[in-house]
Image (tube, one colour):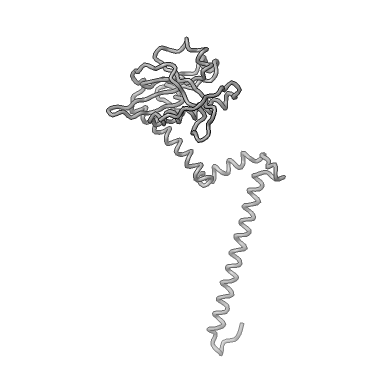
Length: 241
């Protein structure tokens, strides 16, 4: 069930922060509606990139919904291709922007208006949506098999991101780590005079020396053990070392 709480004004929120806030809210909004959702799905046949694509499983069919997020008037009227290829397609807008552009929204395209919460404690997102304009159902503009394949590929991309976060640097190849270290050669650590790259080299050399010293100590112990064993087993007629 969708959670409702008091809403607040977002006039002073910076655009980039607001965009991320709305994207996150839309993600959880679709999940609460029962959808499987992923962002930035590249379509085949020059159909562009869907900002957010949600899949809903019905008793006898699959329903696809596309969402295009716009937070400024310039963004809304830009020449960027709109990938409205689903059964139901929505603009996701702020209330302020919706009032400015509502006359230019096509008849078959719906509108979700973002409403930020006043209080967000214990909530997965900072706001929710209300349907300001309902979309009209239409046929898919992409073959469903191709759409499903692109959807799954995007889901796998997100799984890879999660795996990288979970596994840390062990997920990356040595070559990738080396390239990243070279890229950061000039990055300085405010707590140290040396940069990260030189610190890494020093750490590797120190670790190598420590490892060699440990191996040397182990060899010395083995040698001492064998020497003592040989003395115990020496026959009386054998000369001492």
